[in-house]
Structures are given as structure tokens and as C-alpha cells.
Amino acid sequence: MTVDDPHRVVSSRVAGSPSNRTPGDLLFHPVALVALVLVILNDQVLKVRYPSAFSGKLSDFVGLIYFPLFVVATFEALRWMLRRRPWQLGPRSVIAVSVTVGIAFTLIKLWSPAADFYREHLGLLLWPAYALGDLLQGRGLPGVRVVGLVQDPTDLIALPTLLLTVWVAKRVMVDSSDPP
Image 1 (cartoon, rainbow, N blue to C red):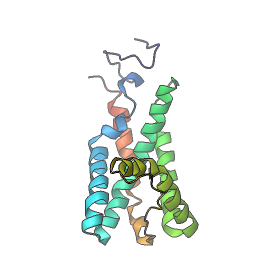
Image 2: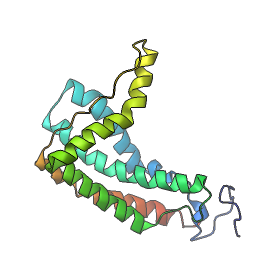
Image 3: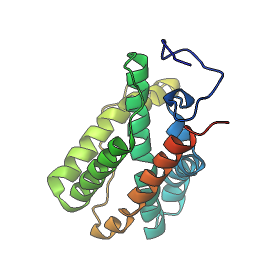
Image 4: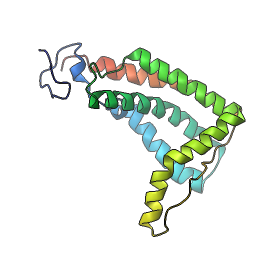
């Protein structure tokens, strides 16, 4: 069966058919979901109430699992919305994103200019969420906040978790090509 419209839902699955995938499906793998829950729990609860080396390292490990999957899923969703065919990215793209994230993480942890860039630009990206929260609480528009970051070279121990990210993406890509 051929699919002319990439937005059309196909009820029958064909082995190897990219139509078995859905934009954003990488984020629904159990490993990705657990990583997301842990990032939120760690950043909103553990780091605030129980700051420690453990909570710092936990953010690094789960962030390196979730963030590359989020980037790939975002690119796939954009390609799908723009009706690019095929919209799915392949394993090489996941590896490229993971390597890029690993390099950026290393630079941020070891090089002060990269860390400053991260602090300032992540604060800028998060500003709409902070602004909405402050407006809802009647505080007016806030300024752009600089996010906190600890430059700790020992955080590089988390880099091998990028291999888990690649494994998750490949599993989603391979499993989606199997017939039901």
C-alpha cells in the first residue's frame, strides 16, 4: 500500500514501512519516559530540597538520555508538519545528534565561555515559561534569568549514557518496521 499524504493515518502496517512511525514516538519509549520523569523530579524536588552530588549527576545522566531523543523527535515533527518526505530521520541522524550533544556537554563542563553561553541562552529559552508563571502569580514580567550550572569535569562520566540514547532510537525505528 502506498501513502500519498504523510499526514494520513494508515490502518494496515507493512513490514519496513516508515508509516508505522509517528512523529514524536521516540519520546514515548519507556526509557525516554523514565528519563523525563527523573529530570523533572530531580530538578524540581531533589536539587531544591536535597542538593547533593547525587542529584547533580542524576541530571547529567538522564539529561543525556532524554535531550538527544527530544532533538531528533522535534526535527521529525517539524519535517512532518512541513510535509517533508520522508519525515523520519534514520539511525545516522540519531548518532550525529548524540555526538553533537556529547561535544556540547563536554565543552560546557570544561570551558567557561561555553558554560556562560549555556547559562545565558538556556535562560533566554526558558523565559516564556518563567514569564507565564510570574504573570499568573501577579508578579509582572520578569527579566531573563541566567540558569545555574556547576562546571564539574567529573560529570563527563555520564557521557556513555548517549549509547543508551542511540539504542532506544534504534529500537523504536526497528520495532516500528515490524508487522503487528
